[in-house]
Image 1: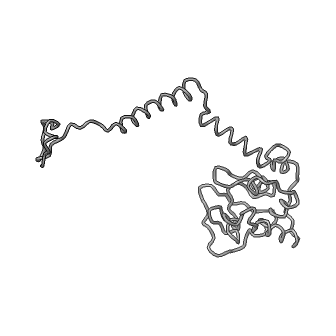
Image 2: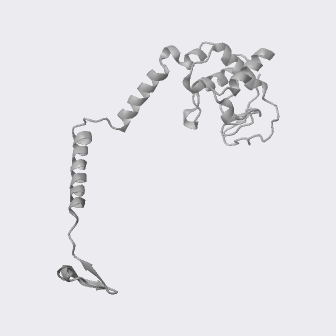
Image 3: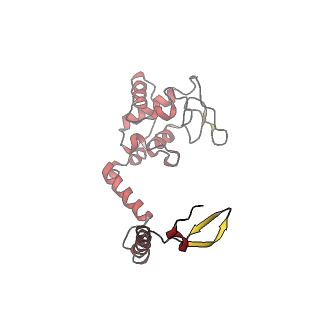
Length: 201
């Protein structure tokens, strides 16, 4: 190990495999940065925890949810759930209704097909063509499930919270009912831990 003349006084006494340590002072910039982080931490603690001037994560979440409701018009007047509670849902069987329901199902505005597959065979979402359903398969249950979504499973309420006309909802659930019993390629396996046999009538 080469020791320069001006480093002799800085050598510490310990040595390991010929390696010795210099007692160098910390760089000034590093020390100021260290002091700054301490000061920042103290101010942060006082601002958020002691005097409660700032919003915590729960308050920020509530504010963001309120802003989203205002931005996307999720007030009670536009709540899709409100509609589902006042309509007697039924499955239509006429070709026009089925065709319109399929168009809604395949629309890029609603993205039903992205999780359930183009033929309802199931991808991320469950298979809609078999007889085993997780959350009921009556007309009312399907309409309610579409309107409410399953946020915990990643399914947004219909159209990412966009209201849907009752006629379109009827056509959509009618199309879904029409594909039960079909045999599309590559159907998703039944989730036997949650799905139960359910026949649409």
